Image 1: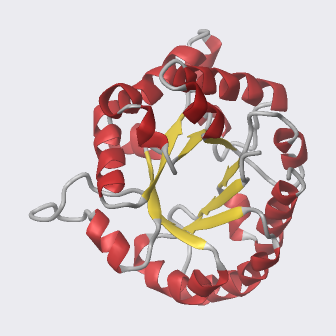
Image 2: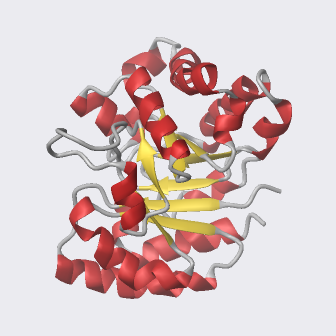
Length: 252
């Protein structure tokens, strides 16, 4: 049985005072044993979050990372900076980074590799737009995004990593893929990895992201290839995030 994994992506939200209130609530999540729980706050608040949650078994992730080690890359942060601040890994290839900031499959793969070299956890995000889904291109798109890492780094690159399927049309829209739609994509992604290494494919945790909330997560977690969730807006409400993590606990 794959250990459930749930992460809250705060995106560009939060101030020190409101973070403190949220973190006080999230601190209760240590009770959700058997589930790996992470939060991904904006960079200015990394240390605030690590100071509160670091001793409670809750990991802290960056929302992105540079593929470069150091140097003249204004506005970027390196894997060494993540590690120095107590972070355990980072999201790479989130749809907002791809759509709004022009990140390419090759660039995302380079960030994934940088995290691996540093011994940090990569969380690779893949997903299709509404137009791509309506054109029947979902599996081609997500497979291409996944293969950018598999073909350049091999299946062993996913040892300890997480793969997150986040349909772009369901992020922040209130729309959610049905459990059956999400399961079909998750199963296909696992099959892509299995073509390289069947054992690693079975071990890989593939999680769903896209307007996940307490009210719809039970059906998603009932699917055999959905191993957790990458949560957006609902992670900014402590009780909502707690309920999602407890639902993941029921999957054990």
